[in-house]
Length: 221
Image (cartoon, rainbow, N blue to C red; front, top):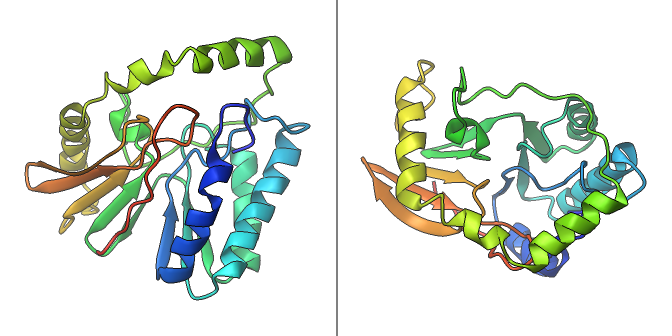
């Protein structure tokens, strides 16, 4: 959200309907972008982001909302905003790296899919990012409109992602993954559901970037 390349507003009605019918709703990272924001600066973006989250949570008081950070919004200053939001809003909480609900595991995907990560389920929050200028935004706009970004999704097949995530889960020594049946993640911009690998079922939500697909997934843990 809040970038030139987003189509997130077109999903707002679907999000509202889903939240109104659900027991819980997971936002699995990179919901907001501070580097490419169209607003004044990162602080302004964080304030508007929190307003959106509060409005969503208050509109569906019987639904519990979970916010998981990704590589675009995993910033220490934004964590402080989320912390104060969780203190004000009873049905909202946030997690820096992952969340388990029943037999389902949720995370953004950048950590277990990253190269050489010391801990695939522990995020180190980053300092505030400098907003990109007009020239960089124009170049990014041309890249998106050329649809070249659609090619990158093909480098992250369901098979490849499941294999790497499964390897990270096997290395986890905390017991986090015991009893897990389903894994939900994003990051790769390539939506798929019900991909079976080594006893687990993997699901990806895609991306709300222009010319890509985004999928709101129903979860029954």
